[in-house]
Length: 240
Image (tube, rainbow, N blue to C red; front, side, top):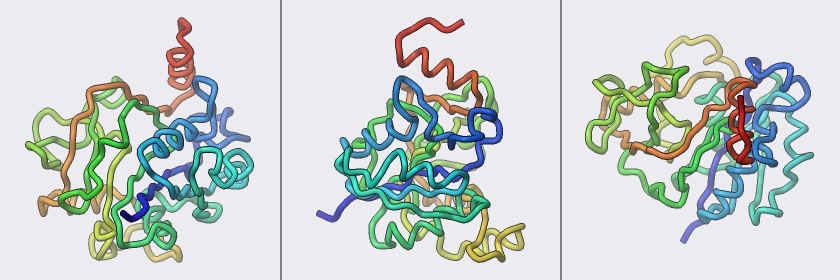
């Protein structure tokens, strides 16, 4: 069986987390005694992943300093450096394909979330171009992102849920991205800079995105307060 690969999206600037992110990229901030990205690496290794690509931009050198080559988790980590300006989710994924390869689907996880999603339970082969994990809408994002229609994810619909930042993707999702993105700012750069959401919505319109509703724990670590709350929960200590 081929080696399962994963991408951890870790190139963001972490502006809402400042001053914590002035010297430490957000995925390297600690919660429960380990970096946020460390939780992902441990779970990916437990799920049978052996090769992980981490995309980097802001304070990129801190990642190999702290994570090394991944051997402590039984992984091989390679770094996809995007330059001083992050390439957004779509551009970052497109840029990382040279390391991920195009032949096999891969797991992709936002580096600044925490969850108890079991990565081993994700489909190895999504039925379409992508399989997304959705969660209940948190207080800071009450409108949600997408709707589940049976096993399919729709861009519109009632009872919208929030995209967890966890999914399984085929490289085919990025085929023809220029036609979908159009003349967006950054799309004509080299490497290009663009968001993934328009490509997902286009694939949803073709019935090519499946999904699941995760009802367990999930945190978008977007502010210092949410990081403190997560840290207290993981350590089992009260938080005001």
